[in-house]
Image (cartoon, rainbow, N blue to C red):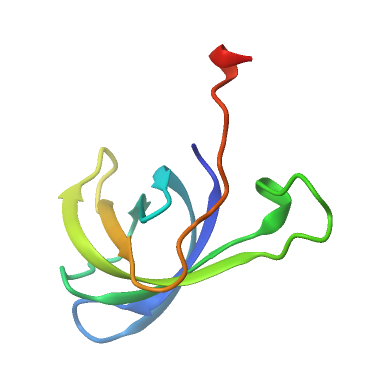
Length: 102
């Protein structure tokens, strides 16, 4: 499921960053996304998903949590990285049904 993400944290040099990106993979316990920042394994990040992209009811709040980087790999684009994050705060509780199951 590709959803927009806003990610905040510190890169491997300790510089604070904030980036708008999208999930490459998303489940209840974590997410993977592409970033242009060099982020070290073990780094803590703040992750925010706007509700308008996944909520079925207007009163649902945006999803916000913290996560720890558990995987870093090179991405297809130059200077990009695929980051795998395990949620250490609230888990993503939204369930999506496959379009092929409809």
